[in-house]
Image (cartoon, rainbow, N blue to C red; front, side, top):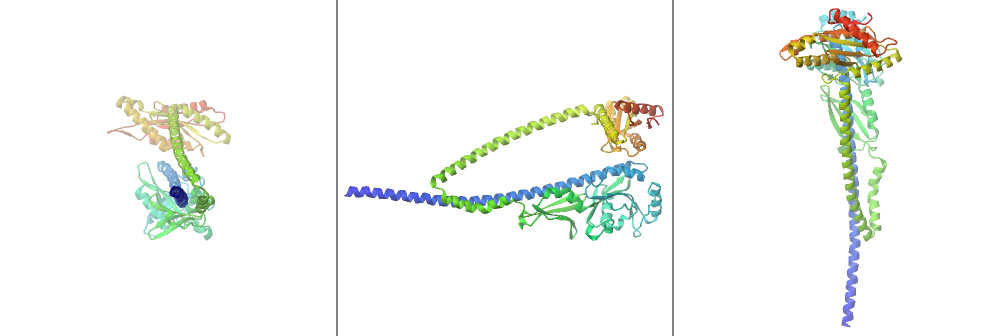
Length: 540
């Protein structure tokens, strides 16, 4: 009996031990499953939070970069106009219209007008009015506002909207605009004014009025003497909607604020949806543009995360609990082991894929740089960086085809430096290289970005100016180049002087590349034999 009792006791103890172990395993599964469910819910919620934060950070950065890039585009365009006006020795209304002709509201979204403004004191108003009337501003009347102040009159103006151009206005009457103009003159750089309702927009119904900002660039002549301002009015709503509306969608609400001292003036508010009411997801960024600070505020909406993402966050606890109750210990153990193994495999696979992509990116970048270097060597002059003869011939051929289709006019200029050989002989080839580089730089300054400047070799240069509004414009352009190239060039402590003989040829029906280039070349030789430092138009 004692032996049987011992055996029974062992059996009972073993059974009990196994039951305890089984219960313990069940409890472990339940506790582990509950903990895993809580952890999964935390991870999902934290992931959604991180995803939302990343989306908001990306949205504020993209929006700020887009605004900064577009304002920089405006600044480049206005600085080009100011440089062209400053280099003009006799600015007329026709010159202003030709200089600003490439600009429109499509290229500069939100722009409502562009003008050229000049300063004048009380006693100078009549003389200033007469002076600019003589320059083509017929019927110009300067409407003086106030006395004992310096006035800022718009003498030339182009409108980009249905409202007519209104030259003659005194911009000093608008404090925000006057402040921008004074800052532009003092800093000699691009300046952005405070938001305000422009005088032109006050003619519209109140519902159609919107805040505008004034963009100003000082105009300096070739001696860096202040002459006036290039001024542009830009509608805030039109500008921001064109730049940002397609980028934002329904995921965020946006405000662009002009923080005047003590007042936050909203230039634009964009409502993408119902606010999410999570302040830690709000994003703000200051934009310093043209000596002025704007603030960009972004607030998330309920549409920031898709319905499926939000549904996952709500269902995670229920799904985890259901799996915890249904899974057996072995399934849980195997699933946990399999998941851990698969995580390791995924990490290893992701690391391998990332390494392959990095290698491919490096190879593509090397190939791109190699192609870029080969193209640079093939089509550009190594000393000046200008187009070479081959690239210039190709662009002339293209211009002949494109202008023949629309009956347009373009001009080819052949430029030969007078006195360059003497510079080489007296000062050496290094000095000659400096002269060639300075010549290239001055030619670029005299022309538009769309014009082609090339060096054929030695002291021979060529220029092509397309889309001429008037064939007589070539005299203005050639005169500007002759004047600029005739200025002395400083080489160390010495100065040297060269001049330019320029031959000009316009495209004619039936011309091919060789014909128009030959005509410009012959005109250049005629300019040299006629006394140099001048230009001759072929066939004139």
